[in-house]
Length: 483
Image (cartoon, rainbow, N blue to C red; front, side):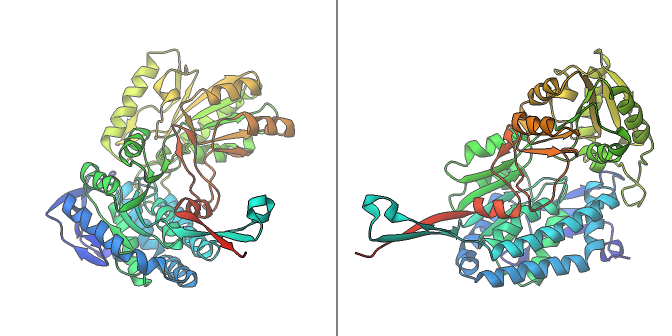
């Protein structure tokens, strides 16, 4: 039995500032999205405490910035090793605070371990390049090179859906590059962030390098974004909040990973039986609460009916229930408000010409896996981000039509295409207006070292450890005059 299972139902959680647990002026209950039980009392930081965390990070800049790369790598390696030892505990924390089924929580922990290992490796690969100054007449007698230096204090604001791994995608490369961090986790999932802060402390991270501040976004988030000592903001969340952060951040660097309604194209030559399991995973893992969750499918008319039939049959077999049950595939959405929003979308869908093939209802507080056909592009289930186990399947007559319909979106994070034609795959990779094209897989595919980010309202900048390190460092040019 894990340490968490032995604890009382509701545990008082403190802020983590300058390597120390800090009391807050107020606390708020944290409830399980699935059972509704109180699972913790969460510290509500005020602006003063947030500024205290920024001060700690500001003072720790030189400590981590001057630390040799091999030492930063060793700390990250120890974090990965400690997390592996406590993997069951970490998975249970994720499940309890987010209602993520334990099978997916365990997968998230495994990915997080990899993410910190990648970060340790990238800490030793940060480098510049030499510049051929004598290529210009005015450069004769000079040599020069570039170096990458830490940017300083990074403000990280993370979402609920991957509360451990998306923290790792911000904290891992930040530490690798020699930066300090002030982290504001999502209000529903602070326990994972506080857990990993303790792991970092145990791994030997100097005090003040990682600070975790929980509380209202309007207080904590705004204080982080507006403080002049913070050099960069890295945010994952909704487009509306991302745009607001960009407007408030001034000249700070910003990496924004925002929304999507990711699409999949299925060509006429595809064997449907071979792709159903991947489509189920892409659409319904973590209740569809994934930035690159499969929300739109454009299937060629020659295989459309077969796909709908087999996809629907598989969706109906998914077990819904307690996220801590190893057999549960679908559990509760993160909040009742989200379920209510989706039910409103279902009413709009019913009033249209679209057809809800399966799902569309709450059962024991859980939104059933939902498949909709014939949805107009203007319906919310088509043009907005569902962030729920909802998929629209439409029929297309050609790949060109499919690409046009995929691109008819304010978002552009990732898209997928199944095809056996090389020319078709190349055409799609060139024409799809997204940050990543996944050929012969669903758009939900991601490994943690690959570049990840989008275009349009899906955000700016790239994550993936190497690419995040580039975002989190400044390039400096050094020129030597030898004459």
